Length: 209
Image 1: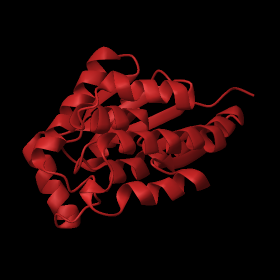
Image 2: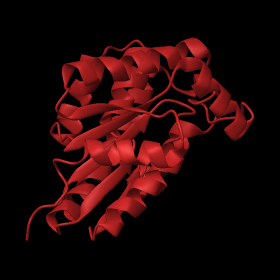
Image 3: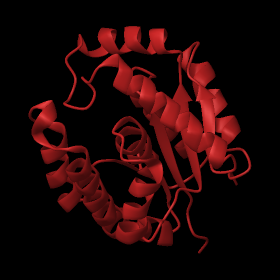
Image 4: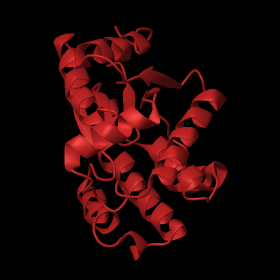
């Protein structure tokens, strides 16, 4: 049996990631692929327990290093218990966020440095990477408008951070895409949802059977 493919969907606040995750999953299943949809932080019992620690409470609950360590621990469990077994069964795995969120959020915006956060991933998950990472991007103003419309400015402890933080997240995603152009693709998230989904599928064209 052929090994499955691992795809991660990334992006900052208000880019329409949840909408596109559902649409992309439906499109891949429509092509006859056996698909597992998962998320980070979370995706396994241990990682879901850590998710609550990460996303609830005051913004100052964890310092950047503790936050990065918790994400790395959740990811290690997610990879071992959920992602790798599914790939070995020949399934495709679509994850709502993965390593690149940690690189952009904790590494770039949190000031730890992308390479420092990548080192945690090398230790916790043996530097396991997606076959393709799709990063939805919007200009900052449109993303902020969408985020406010979605949650009325009431997000989780990370999503509710100030605009300067989220601008740094966007810069982090763009830097990663520049450094790893074969794996990481920036996808324009503007326009009708169906158009954005078509862009995502096009960026997966070389991987699709």
